[in-house]
Length: 212
Image 1 (cartoon, helix red, strand yellow):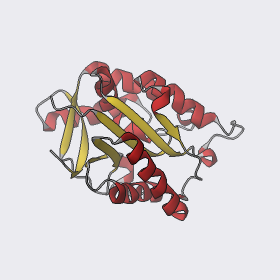
Image 2 (tube, one colour):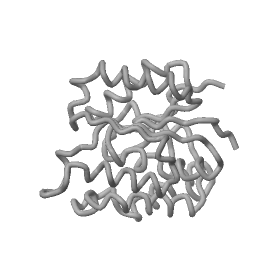
Image 3 (cartoon, one colour):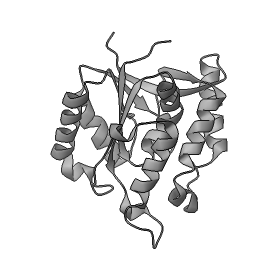
Image 4 (cartoon, helix red, strand yellow):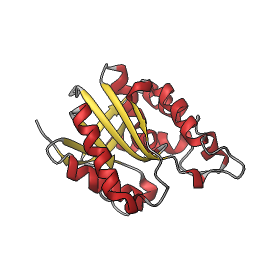
């Protein structure tokens, strides 16, 4: 099994890292990989009415606690949701600083096929900063028209259970009835991706760059 020493996952919003790579994060943490997560927006405008402004940030910490990502390995910025493109240079500078501090072996970003404007910004600026690193694009199917499933992380059932347990910490998103916040969705997608590589369960990624 190929394992990196350190992985940096760049998430435009709270919950993106868990949705796109939660099973892989659980597997890597279990194997002793040094996993870091950086979130760029806490999406305060996407909260249910009456919620505290810090609700998604708090839920993110609870979710990453379940996945086993150490508190000191988390960075949460406070850019406004759907407006990362207006702060492109600052986002790039944040990413470059993380790269210098952490020197990750692998970097996970939203897929290049992701149509969400914030996800496109993080993808593009990460590509500028980490063009010399192995980069994988994680899958968020509701944002894609196409997706190149060209790299796979095989999973055990327990990794999917940890992923779903982490996602349940996002009570605000469950309240809002997000259709991708169901165990059935994540199980079925993981089963399809596993079938593609003759395994039971997997998460798929777009292979952006590989450095061996």
